[in-house]
Length: 359
Image 1 (cartoon, helix red, strand yellow):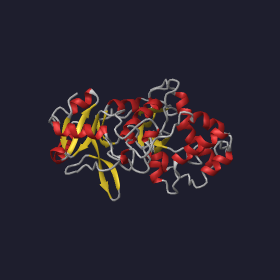
Image 2 (spheres, rainbow, N blue to C red; image 1 turned 45 degrees about the horizontal axis):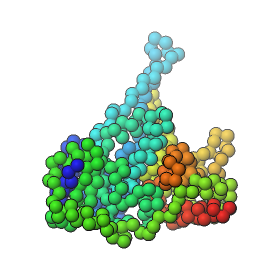
Image 3 (cartoon, one colour; image 1 turned 90 degrees about the horizontal axis):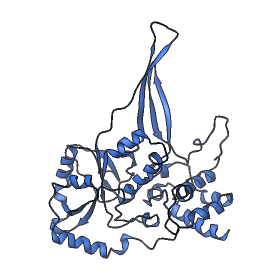
Image 4 (cartoon, rainbow, N blue to C red; image 1 turned 120 degrees about the horizontal axis):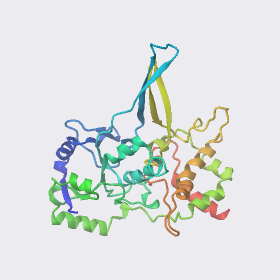
């Protein structure tokens, strides 16, 4: 596929052109945060650092209307009530601009949950088919990033339709690489990248700066087995979870976490059924109607979260012997950056690897 060039000076105009064909979500600065917003006139996308929130809301909205319903009395027989159900309209074609490779890789992990377990989620599937990701390769990793631990990297192509690489040539901009036929059609009106821009990119990829990948990744291939060895060691999990507040910010910002709740909200003779994000770190998440809670403590809940990402998911979707397991974690580091008490999942996993080996 031909490499295209997106100049910094043309970024807003190009995004505006895309917005004529798609519901465009683009990152903008709001205070100290970088958030996705629906495209509006005179908007200026900010691609300078990873968005504060992950991109999963484009596919799994924080609050989603599953259906609406209306009750009506049968006038011929007032002992009967009829229920009329209306499904939501099909999703608009959507383009998400400015995601990072860790977010794009998260799409595959969401697909595992909503498309590949024998029952396809129709609303997720419709959004997935109608959503394109224009992803920005990372020039450097933040000190909370660890995508190279979990099979990714700053320039990973997995899950993206277009990958943008920042270059200084030709006045500054991005070499745009289409990775899917849909991505190629998206770029067909952009000029071909110059030889200087392509050579600069090739040099960057051949010799990335030291800060692009901070240190070698540990070998986590035995993580599922080490977790199971420590599963019943509640002293270990109590130590690791001692600071946790059970606020759930780690799960809400995660590109791969997919827990949700479904509620019916009634108003008179009509109502709607909503799907909303939930968090397994909440004490109410597993509370049963009987009053029993199988994950009553923070230690139990942290064990479940780490176990799902580094044991249960790899076991459900195994790879060939000797290959790096597929973890339900993209290493984006948002959970580390946003945790109010600085719980670091990297430290938990490294402790798991060390103490699980010794047990």
